[in-house]
Amino acid sequence: MKCALGLSLLAAIAMVLGCGGGHNGPPVGSVSGTVTIQGKPAPDVVVEFTPAEGGRGSSGTTDGSGNYELIYSSTQMGAQVGKHEVKVSGNQALDDSNTNLMKPKTSVPKEVSEMTREVDVTSGSNTIDLEYP
Image (cartoon, rainbow, N blue to C red; front, side):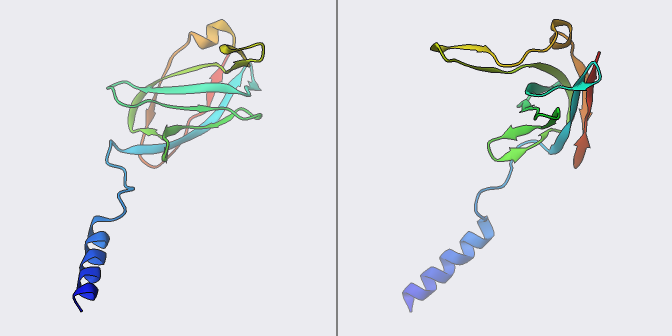
């Protein structure tokens, strides 16, 4: 009887507390979009969102069609709600001849990688397409 009561109490506490998998940080909105450079989809490009007011940044890499989806943490997609500075850059891979070095896997024009944009992420779903000349 004591064992059953103890198990019931333990189950009730677990239900009240939950599994601990909730997000306790700032509000986050999902962010996806397409990166184009000179009117063409930009595959394998790194997209970085940095919150203007500080906090954790988000990043993602475009697929073969230039589409990206931001990752906020290992367990959550998206970006912190608010204004962000956005940059894009080429992706890197390990150098086959020297595994201690990275080499460019893809590149973007220098003027594009030096550009920054300000965007606003809202709660919910955000489609933010990034077009570069």
